[in-house]
Image (cartoon, rainbow, N blue to C red; front, side):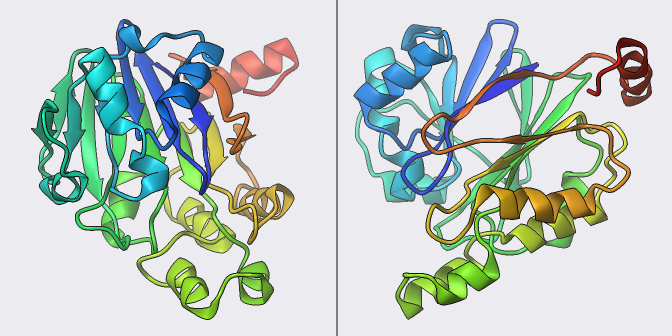
Length: 270
């Protein structure tokens, strides 16, 4: 299994997950033209996509969904609440139940309920029967359910949206600060680090820091906060950016222990 980001942040989001010939796009917050351009940079065309999955209806996640789905006749998987907000005619909408896994070709997808100020938001865990990739952004607080579901992953695409000090003293109006920092907003650097302290990291090969605010955070602040929580971890900490996204990352088929050994043999870390 491998994954990449077409872009991550408040100006647009899109994450690709690939297993064999199965290619799923999680969210599409860019214009059709920009999406096609970003897909090309990832070495893909719209025709090669299998389906679009939607986490929630905010424009930075849903802006290009309908046009992309229409142009390439793609099914769109989403919760009924998100579908209600989308209100688009003529799409092949497939309803997700937050308690039920769905198999899309070569991947099993688990929609995970998260607290966010949307109608029926969710995030996703992808499973190919050997590896598990978790995507967790746009979440206001870490719940016991999230901790239970996101433990023992092989890769994690994780939001670290804001630095509390920068948010407090930044340019956002008061109501927006309250929204971002509230229980239905986004994860701070410290909340993201907190999750890492509460889950089993043993087989985790990489963590991609995602959805970093351009006004209320800096990549180095996010990285520092997470690094502190990863004291004895030997995996790779990556950064998904707004404009460049994140290039393809392959999740190794080896167990974590084999990885560490191979890393020692090759003189590099995995």
